[in-house]
Image 1 (cartoon, helix red, strand yellow):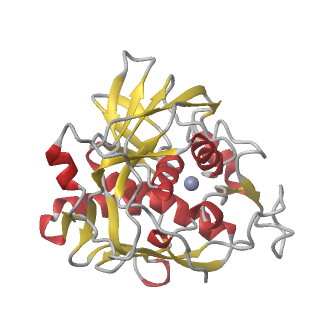
Image 2: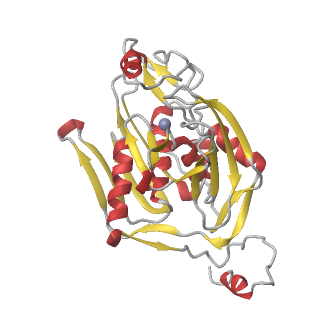
Image 3: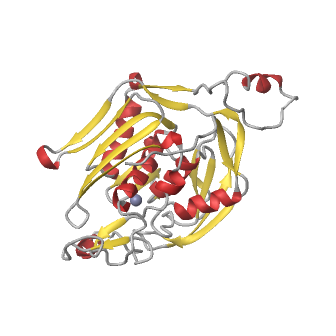
Length: 326
Ligand SMILES: [Zn+2]
């Protein structure tokens, strides 16, 4: 069990300057160039297909498409695949507004974690914006279950302070059972979650390729484990692991990325057991449908907490007023 450490500003953020990434899609195997572009306050995260006349797909639960081994968005037949690691990095760093330009259908997998995104964004710098961040505050439990007994999959979101996540996994050996608990609102996403890489079993590779998946997989973008070797970490074929519990940390990373599709940062407590992308996004959709289960609200800062250092905007008195009530 580990706790997150730092705090987030209560104002929306974007990035200081555009950032470029090149790589391949994990599932499509397609080469892709991705550009992250600063966006105005209140605009949210919007994907843009530069190869399709800049067609835009906002990152919201409304646009969730096929979800099995990755989360994809679709609108009017246009697809964006494998959004979860990038969205996780954006939530983890508190980036609220961004345009994500892609010249192909899939976000690049890079090293299989969120660390390359996080490192590049932190190097470029975050930019505070003149708008208080709105949170999706959970008012009552919303749960999704699938199956029953020892193999039941479960995910639920509950009222609570911060954004706490309790994730349990139960995979075949050598991964086995593990659990992680942390509070994202308290910080340290960069150190504890972002470096955790995606993973898969060597024995499943042929089946997944037959399904048209993991065409871009390599030793450099995923942890490959094998069921046929007995104890970890020796059973990791391309070790070493970045954390002894890297697998469950990656599930936390995925969960944060998938819950980003609620469109606002969650204010509450999330519990997930043996879940995956389909369960994560099913929870988002059930939550968004139940308008009595949440409210959009600002957080109140403690009086002793320093205010963000931003220049006053004298030409707009109402905007200046907005700063007073936090
Ligand atoms: Zn993942």
